[in-house]
Length: 169
Length: 196
Image (cartoon, rainbow over all chains, first blue to last red; front, side, top):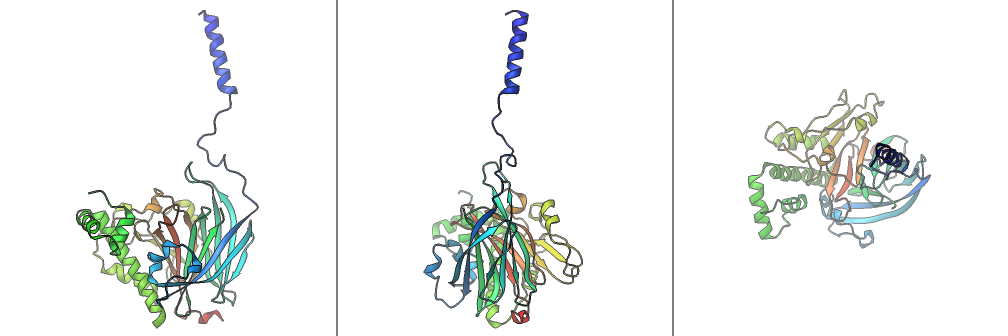
């Protein structure tokens, strides 16, 4: 191969490197889809109590209820099951049996922590008392769709209320 | 024997393992400080929540005091580095700070049932945000704080206001991520009476 051939080959190779689109690597933020304008969430409200009545079949399969800290109560009853539409940045209210009000806000789409993970949603929840004061001013989570998270501890009829929130997949 | 999984440690702590496996796990725990610490933390935290559940029928209880009482029972060993609360800066700055006298305080707790690790509480008299580890038998995986394990739902920031509370990452077979996140808010002394 002559010197000019080598130079030509090198030029072609370098051009190919520049022109050929590279496979998408590593940057989960760049690969993220735009945040949806609205998502939906399932919210269930459970009454936890120690009256040995067991777990309400209406709750469905929920193995976590048998583990601490849920297992501090031996019985769970389904008080309500709700579907909330969460437009981005708008608080969706839900009246609780305690008389307080839960507010859930979808705030943003969050890049996945690992490349293999799915994008998550930044969601905030708060609970207001009927007099307008905060009971729980704010909890912000980044949630994988399909995974429950729980807010528990409000006293209710000799037991406590557990609120389960799951972003729809 | 094989190293027991966190789930097995939890079942062992709950007395739910079969006799053969329980004996094997007991032998492992006997010789491994980390496993022993996890078991201690599991007993401690489940005891606290159970205590509060029982107290609800008899009257209010301060969760923070209960935690501190449990912590005080533990041997005063300095926590290992890995057990300390290492809150990423982004999260720390995302905590609400404009609540004046309702200063926010956070303290890390080593582990609940194998995964977890983070306890937070608020008290009026605490002047400024701070974080420290709880000496619950020292070592813990502090998985969530390390970022080693990705929980299905991560608590990004929390403001318990005038209430006290805690965040648990509970091992869960029913969850794809293997943990369920629970934010526990304790009712104040007046229960719901102050609501009106």
